[in-house]
Length: 397
Image 1 (cartoon, rainbow, N blue to C red):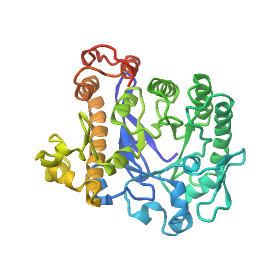
Image 2: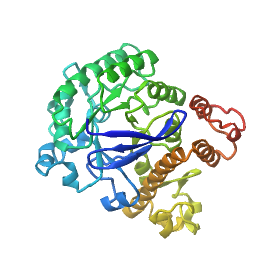
Image 3: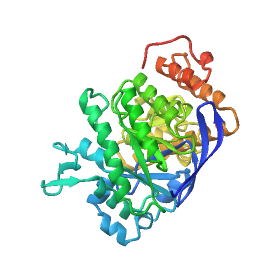
């Protein structure tokens, strides 16, 4: 096992920890920006370090297509290839196949898909996914799982969950570098608590370095979402990191952290930046709006980032969607916001003021007290009293 996970603070289910990986010592809870091709669109490595980014996520599927795993291996791995000195995590490639490619066919052998290069059928097996990830060399690598949208029900969910466990064993057997790369398993099982429980127990028996909660953030209702997270975090080991895949809305990260999750990734902060939206404590600021044209304020006067110290809303309004610089500056700010949110979560748990932090966060996002019902329900389970933030129960958002 190539990681150490030390809990340094708690509040009920929430925890702050130090996660020591081969390339970096990280503080959790933490958010990981997605750098599809080994780059976060529009940001340099120096800028990522400057804003406090600890782990970058790379997409195995995209990296294997271009520049190719063998080339990355020749350079001594992705860290050296992209000159990133901190931690990296790669996904298994399975999700991209299912989401990007029509006609992805999943059988016991693996995922068969049409090559985007020449249209020929190709097969990604658990063994091959691990082989590619071993060449890329990230600190954390993910098992190939059988991906099903959470909105699907019936026997397919059960089949996928059991197959995910069988593929886990094939991934473990294929993993050549357990001393330098940590293989995480992924809990599947849709929205069915019985299947999720079987999957959690199966993975925990295999004593992995860390565990991810997969198959969420795919369109399920928020009430189902938080309940699955709560169930899985409660059953996963205390001394191993827990990673909720595909979660990037600040509210979701605060709720999941209260429920005992540690790691998150999502394209949301950078994608929303490219559409001209900035993340602020109150929610989202749409810089395309005409009202921004003569607004002399920064995006967020409380934000210490370079963009907020340097540029006005009016200037950014001018750039947004017309100039590449606009989306670069907004991506910088949005990721800066996510890194600060991660640090604030960590510090407030360590300093024993996590409930106050959560209440402050909710009051700012919902000044009228219209906190969504699912958040109220989740906080009750997390043992955090937010009654002072809620006017009364409102319908789920």
